[in-house]
Image (cartoon, helix red, strand yellow):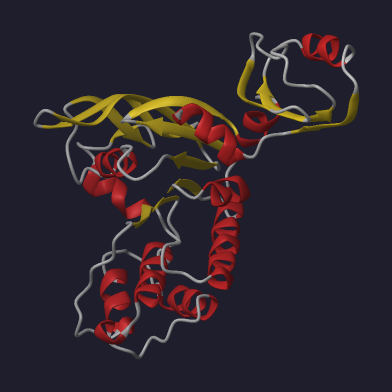
Length: 290
């Protein structure tokens, strides 16, 4: 079962493209990453998914229901953490969370206390007295207090220190083990690599790649670094090589293709070392953007 389906989703702001022909299917129980730099169209897709804005064309479904038509019903089972947090400044944290909990048809008291303890959040302080990081903690607790079936996270870790980020990752992993599906948007590639099963790369509002995180690394380019004598002779200008950097004693490049073509070249050279590595997710990401 697909929990989320984007079907040719297109959103224009006047003549400015937000996203175009986005097609993504997210399975039940999956942690799905959505990566791209700021301005790539991630938040546009998410806000359309939540029916906060309406599409120019195409459609989005959640739990097999149209996200626009049934938005009021679907949001009861969705936890959402936006990239920017704004609250009533003079409210206490606990009052704000209890107000949020009142929209759901079950008692969230124990869950609020549990989440606040994990995130080290002081429930008695006023919103106006909180740092940006602590306001982000409030958003995390607010998004999870009703044990949602679908968790949507838009740049969730900004403002959190590294220790709190790890607690947050552990918390999301636990909610996923309990059955929640997670849609996780970020421009921080290490987060996606640590948490997600599959990933979609978005560029200028369009999807350029959807793949398992492990496959994206292993079925992609290999990274070569070769050292030896008299290497700068142009032999590496073959199909499949990119990011080529040549010097007399060292050559580095990415390669995708028949590995025997590289072995044939190397067999003719006087080498002192050869290093072959998997590229990092960040290097793969930059390849698609270049």
